[in-house]
Length: 378
Image (cartoon, rainbow, N blue to C red):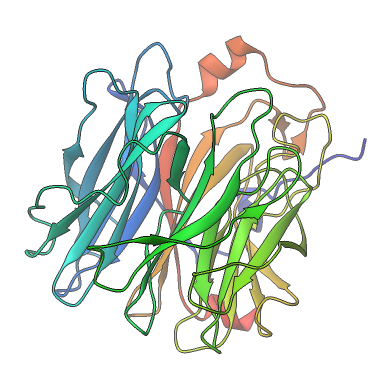
């Protein structure tokens, strides 16, 4: 087996600033899956889920609640953390929040996991910049399947005003025959009513997972997809999310890990954030989730050019998000945790033990602040 190398901190461009948004501590073992909006006054609002210590630890169905925090300096420091969605007795948790700024409102959404095969997607509105939110207007209630929002937390607002929510679903998650498929919900009335896409995108093995959507210059949409097939896959829509094409490979090697797709502001270029790591067939995620990298496409996603690495080292880096601010700076959010399977930037060739994971699995929410020029001059 060829070694898989992750870049050291010294190989990361120094113009990229790295900050810890929410560290792991005695109260919280994991914080991640963040969504950021820039408010009218230039301050930032972030939503993320955060896990308390408990029997499930930082596992996906642990004791996760949804929190908000604020930044007055473009993401360098965060404060005023407050919980906005709690666990209800009988449910597993609440997770995967997203924020979306409309003309007069900020929308907050998140999924409530009732079980491994049933969810509700909540949506709340704020008319005071996120200081308060109204009652939930669910996008769906008790789906009767495991249906959640896509992995890169975002609700996409198109130039037409349509809202597009990428989603994934399966009958039940974490079972032997699990196979996820993806699609979208869309709304033409600011999120009051929602319609599911007419078809779903499917792939072999565990399926198509964690879709992330960006508009292309011609008005069509491109979707990036987490897979178990050794590469980032893509699908497209010519009708603003009402239907989706069959998936195809991007040509970018990848483990089974989250991606995040965005359009570079004031440009036709697309930017893809992903883990640029080789496929390892006997790894539990089919490869290490490091480094965190970015690639650009100037032809609508037909071809890709790697820009560079954003973070690396002996860490798992995943559960991505990205918001471009009015200044052009990208706020890229992600989970970072020491990975005992990576030693000196190389996959050691053996899986971690439960004792190693219990000792090292403290997962923090980080942000990389990247100037717009980084995406165009590399």
